Image (cartoon, rainbow, N blue to C red):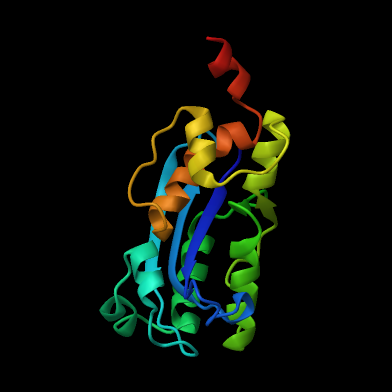
Length: 189
């Protein structure tokens, strides 16, 4: 593996259809750089203040643990994106890529960048670690990050549905996503 940026986002959400998927806004960004040996070399975290759905739903707060005062005191997306851009540039190499668990995070960054009229903060090729994991481990269908950790024999670390903790857990799954480790080896031992 080369230097890989792992990104995870949390966004405004509801369980009653009040916030459509295309109207969700980032409320937390978590990212980490992982070196060629799979070691986390740097971390980034920022809350983000939403502008369309300013009030977090009770569902969103329960799911993420993010409180209204966390986002009220946070920078707007364009400021957080600039901080993320700086973080990306600190460790990027000519062969760096970024990944997320699924395509959601890539699409959400695209949506928020359009909403705020800015250039996307990550200008690296994207890889879908969820898809890579399913293909390299030949498990048939894509699974959630928590299930993938379970399959790999990894206990979730930190709080699930918190951006930096989820990014760090995805980073731990990269050896399986890139086929350097096998679930079959774990099962057969």
